[in-house]
Image (cartoon, rainbow, N blue to C red):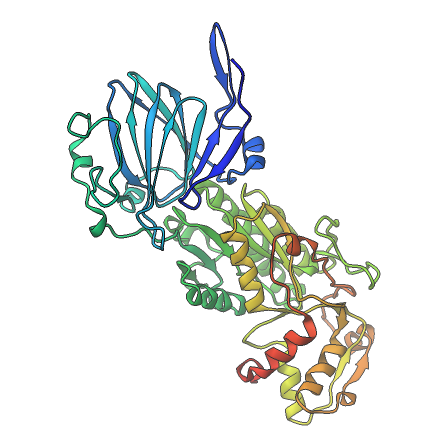
Amino acid sequence: MVAAELSVTGTEIPGLLMVQLPVHGDERGWFKENWQREKMVAAGLPDFGPVQNNISFNAAVGTTRGIHAEPWDKYISVATGKIFGAWVDLRAGAGFGTLVTAQISPGQAVFVPRGVGNAFQTLEPDTAYTYLVNDHWSARAQEQYTFLNLADPTVAVPWPIGLDQAVLSDKDRAHPALETVTPMDPAPIIILGANGQLGRALISHCQDHAIPHLGFDRTSWDLTAPHAWPTPALQGARAVINAAAHTQVDDAETPEGRPQAWAANATAVTALAAACRAAGVPLAHVSTDYVFDGTLPVDQAYSTDAPVSPVSVYGQSKAAGEAAAATVPRHWIVRTSWVIGDGHNFVATMARLAATGVDPTVVDDQHGRLTFTPDLAQALIHLITTEAPTGTYHYTCDGPAVTWHQIAQWVYSDAGHDPARITPISTAEYTATRPGQAPRPTNSTLDLTSARDAGLALSDLRSRLTAWLDSSPHTSS
């Protein structure tokens, strides 16, 4: 027997993929690699993280099952025999009701995404097929199933064996017609830290783009209290975005703040990663330029694979959190810098000082780029919805690295004030009068190659700042 090449092809239903499997046979029988993660992901299958393997045996020809749409992804192949498969898109959207059919034998497999109904009719006796799923079955999960009648006249599946001659269950006979089926919404994205600057931007982005989501703030999901987490919400979730953290950099250097920073940024992330692994849910984790010591020459940028070497408690705790997040099989660690949102921040402070006639001193020897929370929110959602490769990403505005002093000058200039009112000062001079300051990286510039490769939208820093300042709510005191 000559084995076919492994290949993956799309269908009329987005995400429904047909797989050609190499089958090696001789007089003894045959052998195939039913699921080989590295090869199949390289060929085009999603890295969907299966957690359960099921086998369905069907004794009689004409045994028909379905049409069931489950709240998880499935990878299905035949172990022995042959089946006729029918798949109907039961997800909300323009493709609702689209039908795809195919015959499946041991040399083929199919990847069925969440919300696509699948049904099978056996064409040979003693047919068995196996399917991998990326969530554990539970009664709660079964409540989210969507069903379609096998004989629905609108979809009109061309069954090889008429349903009046087929073997099927009473439950399958009683499924509803397409016109009464409630489409399945995409799985929700869980957003932790929903009341923070980034969390609010994430919620806003999901609302604006009709992306199902569940937001949790500290009162409903306290990262430092894993025993009280509403972990059932993880089952069936599309992903978790951890936008919660202890970000008070100077406070983290105090005896009181140090354990709080480690609890939120490291210990809690370790527990969160374990919960995501158990539920089979991807994790997007937000990190920081503070995981680097900032000693790289200021004309260079930190790559994603540069060794971490934090010099502050905050940076150390965040580096530990990264290591924990990386244990989730499907994860995206997104490092960012100099975050500006709709709350208290450097840009808002400079705009207020300009308007009130204050002439501040601002450090001029720390280099980096700003990141605006709506942009970062869009980037995080993009990684999840496009199922970007697992790994570490850097995301900030684009353009040359600048100093805080330069940014302050831009704010004053855009507000119609004289930028010469701002006095430059070195970090050493600034901290000499402010004891207890955490060490800051001199160079916070992150290399953005990973963001570009993932197709993330990158804004020019200078023009993005002007656009932000033109939106007055962001610069209110």
